[in-house]
Image (cartoon, rainbow, N blue to C red):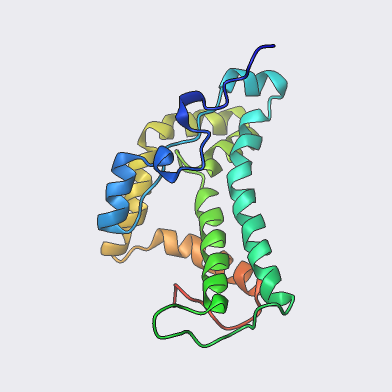
Length: 188
């Protein structure tokens, strides 16, 4: 009986250090924004099963963020955790942690859906575009990381908060749909 190598590239692991990207980690520590290593995907194997394979793989990340946000909201909506509980002197309350958990997962989902390479949204929208639109994305792709860095870091410094303009409205709407309270924990 042949064995299947489960730890290909050392990435099938619950050890978070196996997933750290050195530059993304440094950025997270010093700038407050970072990333992990990309998920390795065998493009040939995925596309052989269905033409929508890459799109479906890319959709899995944002969908999992939305499911985690819904899961977190269930505890508060179900009454197992109060909407607001005072925090202790050292640690935040469970209520606050769950509110933050929901907020962050919605923010990550929406951020990943932005159609700029290397985010998942680029691969998702690519599948639905006509060939002319796909060619345009192919031309923009080499500059995707620069566009993303400019949106995250340069835009707010120049008082052009494109990222906030794109994300803030849907983020608040989804958050208040899951937890209908006036409690935006991270953004004003």
